[in-house]
Amino acid sequence: MDSLPPPRLGFKGLLFAGLAAVLPALLVALILVKGRDLVHSLGGQYVAPLLFPRMAPPLPLGPEILADLAALAVLVGLVLGAGLLVRNVFGRHMLELTEHALLRLPVIRHLYPALRQLTDFLVSQKRPAEFQRVVAVPYPHPGAYAIGFVTGEGLPEVEAAAGRRMLTVFIPSSPVPFTGWICLTPQETAVPLSMTVEEALRYCVSAGVSKPGRVIPAPGV
Image (cartoon, rainbow, N blue to C red):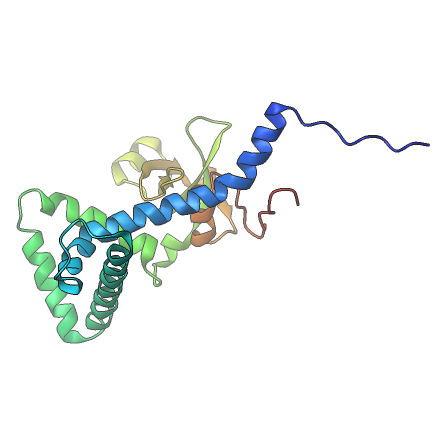
């Protein structure tokens, strides 16, 4: 019996196969380019004249990239230095004084506490126990579930009106989990999940493609 010929791929099939092969690399390249632009705006443009004082702007691509790499090293060093500083009593005291000064500014005093709590929740390696719970809650309507992080108990006024205990759940948006919504849900409707916070963040960033324990295969595998 003759073997069947391989299926013919039309324009649509070839297009989607090509996108599956090329898009991951393009997305990585886009992230690198945007990250380099950020580093350049934060420090690269100021480091370049110090490294290449005899070159008039705009610099060639090579020296500009070297300046950006130097600025990135300086920024990483500053972050590590800040982490080392806040591990001692003097550093923590300086941080408290800085935060106290920020909280006296008209607009920043309303934004800084919320942003500080959010970054502590997403970045800190010593989260409170209630911050380590990942749940699925009925959102935005019954029958549909959204992944969220339990950030604390519900508001007393809402619990009194509902007549039951509530949970405050932060529902991250996808693919940028640093923004999202706050949901007050009854405790019994929150479905506990075994995934960690890091796994839940990867799940959100990948729009549900990266599941806990699953390795994403390469195109054609």
